[in-house]
Each structure stands twice: as structure tokens, then as C-alpha cells.
Amino acid sequence: MTDYTSLYRNKLMSAQQVAQCVQNGWVIGTDAGAAQPVSLFTALAERAYKDELSGVKVHIMLDVYPFEFYADPQLNGKINGVSWFSSGGARKAVNGGWATFVPNYYRDIPRHLAAGYDFDAVFLEVSPMDKHGYFSLATVASISDVMISKSRRVYVVVNDKQPRAVCGSMLHISQVDGISEHSHELPVLPAATLDDVSVAIGNIIAEQIPDGACIQLGIGAIPDATGMALKNKKDLGIHTEMFTDSMVELIECGAVNNSRKQIHRGQSVTTFAYGSKRIYDYIDDNPGIALMPVDYVNDPNVICKNDNMISINAAIEVDLFGQVCAESVGTKHMSGTGGQVDYVRGACQSKGGMSFIAFASTAKNGTISKISPILTPGAVCTTGKNDVDHIVTEYGIAKLRGRPMSERVKALIAIAHPNFRDELTFEAKKRGLIV
Image 1 (tube, rainbow, N blue to C red):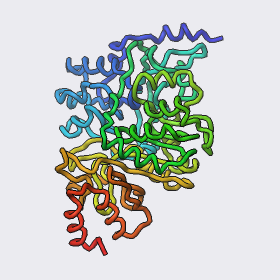
Image 2 (cartoon, rainbow, N blue to C red):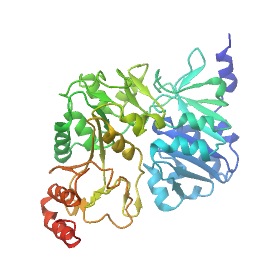
Image 3 (cartoon, rainbow, N blue to C red):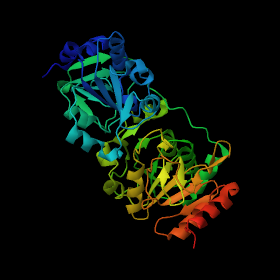
Image 4 (cartoon, rainbow, N blue to C red):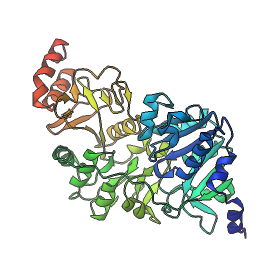
């Protein structure tokens, strides 16, 4: 029998020793959220500050730590981030010109990596090794498997605070080149503030969701408020990109039991989890949650296999054509497409399914309408007019999919803030959009 404990000891290194292995021009990959080993990237930055590195690229998404290569433009040319979905520090770096991003649908990232990328190393944070020599990839399964398969080297950080996902991706010690240890609390996503508007929108959406539906919730106050408004429903299921605190709440109160799903019945399916310690504790050793690669979880042809699939996501603005911008403020980069389009399409293909794009009707203390005649110049169109299904504000729901343009425009104006409806009507008539 293989002595995995001895093998573990032989591969044990400090974070600084791992960083010393990195050479100029290396391409390094990591996955989303809590999978990112902050200790290794800190050690790498220390070398860069000493002018010991140049030309290193880090492919990363949904950054949750204040990584130096994003925070400090002095590292430009030494370590640069390549973001597949920006958050936190990536936004500053991309807009500042010392990081770049890759436009994509989340479901397609494994395909892009497999076809066009090779990595010199992959850095991942994992749970402690089991007696068979396996590490759990814990809270994230989205793109790790393909990165590992495309990498010359794999370095892991073992954190005893990482949950062991028994229905998630695993990594065997035989695949690992170096192991470092770093015990620390996992990053948490601060709870969204549920104001009167988000609660109102959540209640409006919840009224449309039948018992037995399968849900996907995005990030933010409105998806969280919707989750809270679903606590009186029965037999709900979960098939989602991101596993959230509101989903744990729904499971523990009995609203979610996954009993009426057509696929993965009895399990909540996700590709990564991010939120509070409550989520991480829930995942640990729990066969009721399945963490799977994103090219499966976010595939619209998989999503639609569950009847009454409901997707709920947010937006920055929507124009009168129904085009949704969810990733920029004008030309200012904010995030990425992520899985919004994946779930809009998957839900709309589902028998009885519905997609909701929801947001407050105004921004900047009521001075700007988030339903506008045209998208702000330079704004990115995330979900196109042909895909969008329902748009929701605190003033109601506009059903757009399959309706004539004139009816769509009238429906959108009806859920805009009253202070902007006359202006929107004038602009729509001027452009011949209302018959």
C-alpha cells in the first residue's frame, strides 16, 4: 500500500519555496473565489518587488483577495492579471491598463482553455488530504480540472479550514508537484443590504415562481431578497452557478428539497460557492451538494432539463430594445458576462421555465433611470434583445420575449420610475418604437 503520508512530506514546501520555482514568462492559472491560494500569490509578489520576476501572467476569475498584481501598478510587466470574470481589484487594474480581461460565456471557459492555452503552473487551495491521497478542491469546481490537465505543474496550498466536498472535484497527490500549508479563515462575501426596493422586487419575482421550480440566483441584494421571499414555497430545487447563503436558508427551512428535479434529484448542483462561513460548513462532507465543472453546470442544454427552471440575475441598465448591460458603466469595465446568458437561455428552453433580469428602477438617488432609450455609449450588451425574457423593477414585471416591439417598449416604460416615463415615451415615439 502506498504511503501517502511520506509522499506528502516529500512534497511539502513553504510558500516562498513554491514562488522560487516560478520563472520569467510563466503562465499561471487559478480558479475562482476561495480556490485562490493567497499565500502563494503574496510570495510571488515579494519576488516581483525585488525585481526577480518579469513577464508572469496570472489567469484568474472572481478575485476575492487584494492581490498585489491587481492592486499595485508598479508590478506591471512583472506580474499581470488576466481576468476571466472581474471583481474586486481586477476592475481597478483593467480600467487602469495593467491587467486585461477575456470576454466569454462562463460555460465556454473550459473549452477556450483546452483549445488555446497551456499553463506552466496551476495554483489552488485545497482541503486536507484523505487516507487515499486525495485532496478535495472544496468550494470550487468550475475550471480547475481543465487547468490541471493543461498545466506542466500543480502546486496546492492545504488549508484545514477548507470544506471537503464529497461530491466535487478531487486532486490526487500523484498529480501534485508541491504542497504548502496555510491555515486561515476563508474569504466571506458581506451580506447584501436588503432595502425596501430589493425586498419589493424579490416579492414580485417570488409570486411568479411555482412550487417544485428549480432556481438559479445571481449575486446581490435582489437575488438574496428573492431567496428570502421563497421560504414558503415547497419542493424547490437548486441548479445554479453560484451557491449562496440564501440557498442554505431555503434548504434548512425546508423550501428546497430537490425532490422534483428531472436531473440530479436530491442534490443541489453548483459550480462554486461563495458567501459566509455557514455555506462552507454546509458543504463539508455533504453529499447533498454537487460541485461540478462549469461547462456542464452552465450548459443551457443541461440547465433546461429541469422543468420550471427559474433564473434570476441583475443588470446595470436596460434600453428600450430590451438589451441588458450587466458588466460595464459606459466604457468603465465592471465585471464580465459570467453565467447570465447561460441561465437566461437555459431557463427559457426549460418546460415552464422563466428568466428574470431585475434591478432598481433608478440610480444615483433617483437622478438616473436604469431603463433608458439607448444603452450608455460604450456600454457592453450582456444579454441581447432576442434572449431577454422578463425585466423586473419595483414597479412590476415586463414580459418581453416573443412580444412585438411596440408592446415590449410600453411594458418597459410601465415599470420605469414614474419620473422618467414621459421622457421614455417621447424618445420611443421619436424613434418610431411605439405604434
